Image (cartoon, rainbow, N blue to C red; front, side):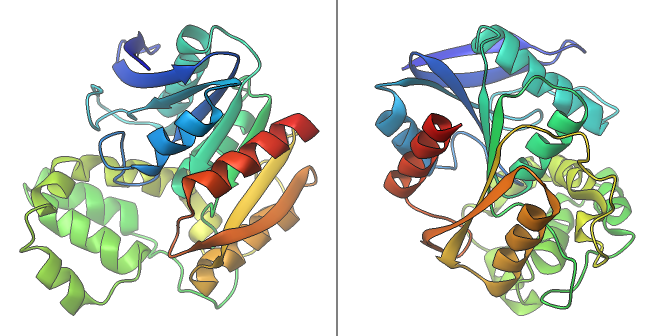
Amino acid sequence: MFEGTVTSADGTRLAYTAWGAGAPIVIIDGATAHRATTAENPATAALLADEFLVINYDRRGRGDSDDHLPYAVEREFEDLAAIIEQAGHARPTTVFGWSSGGNLALNAAQAGVPIARIAAFEPNAAVDDTRPPLPGDYVERLDAAVAAGRPGDAVALFLTEAVLLPPELVAGMREEDWWPGLEAIAPTIAYDGRQVGDALSGRPLRPDLWNRIDIPVLVLHGIDTWPALAAGARAIAAHLPTATLRPVPGQEHSTTPDVLAAALRDFIKEN
């Protein structure tokens, strides 16, 4: 295992951990997650390190990575490009994203970031009535709460409007010891809100959304996950001509490292 940093185009320092050698696999976390919070990532990397160079980085503003304002989605495309270039030695790279990290990977590929193939676990989409869409002012309300010094309200907004947890449950969560850790990265929740864009609008996915992606894409969802997440994964897979949909054992927006590692290994070898 190796820990290092890369520098993005705007000077932002990004921290990462790498395991193994060989063809690179870059792991992108979803909203609120980073290296210190996602135990599945190092466990998955350990299973793949015999054959691949697995890189997990803290997205800007999270964990040990820095940030520069103002934010734009393009900055995270540049971040991913820097990881591929500097940590992955510019070799053909598989990018795997959890949740909205999968949306980021698709957006980056659409923008021209050199990616060989993409795998995404339950990327975000709401195109029917299986879940309510994000409110039209969701990102603006997140930014306003952070700017007003109310990061806890931003986290609560994410949990109620995006994750769809009951408000009374979220109110109790605010008393937990781990809540301040979420408040610390509250400014980045709006970053993911911008990355998912109108994929969570409740409308059919636009024909021009990801229309320049011509690389293999694997869309995964847990067999026993929440119905809205499976529906979103199916919608994205159906929207992308080069995509394959693969239900795997898993529930509640996650799967196990052994399942994920095997799926990624098979996907890379088949493509």
